[in-house]
Length: 293
Ligand code: GLN
Image (cartoon, rainbow, N blue to C red; front, side):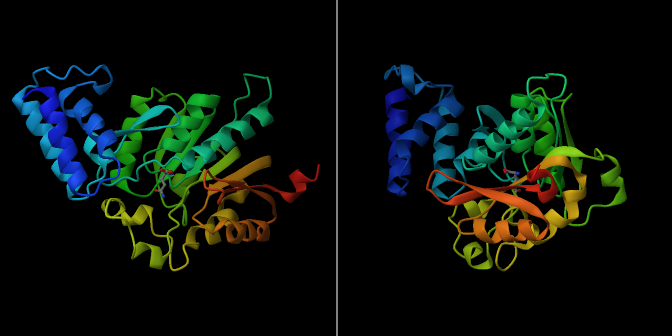
């Protein structure tokens, strides 16, 4: 089949299913299945029939609601590529704000002294996108904790893909009830703790987009009001923060104020960063004794 025909066919399949990003996704599928770059588009190039079939099959999977990111098997976050697929949360653009804040905070703490690059513990790491991006950008030593063995496999592969074996450690564990074995593998004190925990509410879980229904419930559901993790993690992990250390978390829509209060109850002085839609999205805080100095 020639490329123009294949391109039209994919676009029609996607458009007929009501996909609002049919043109973009067609280009992505052409690149993935047939290594065909639509930017330097030669409409009459012959596409190998097996590759064309792979592309059409991918478009049909999309129509059934499978996320594009799972089909492609990788996705970019903060300018780096990550393996994704069944069993792991797809990195979201909002989470880049969390990574950015952590990188800025590390820079402020360590200053120009490049021998002091800081230490980070990331809770609920999923694909590992946060600790890996932070380690790449700041040079910090990062430890990530993930409860799902399936997600941890992606995390480990992503460490290798991004060549951060010397700076990022992926650990299996439950951040709500960390056991001694896990705690022993972590540094006594760190400069930053990051977390993008599951935060969807019970009612949001009932109204998920069909793509999101393919993502693991364990990475999405944060209890009835979505706040279960925030109720526990600040108290449970604050002892691991160094004196001037900072806790930085992502929150769900309309949760930032409630999460800020939960962090304040544990003795933190907090702030909120808004996302691209002007919604409070990132809550950060230092322990009050450090913040007043
Ligand atoms: N920290 C990971 C991410 O931001 C996973 C989050 C999660 O599983 N809730 O993508």
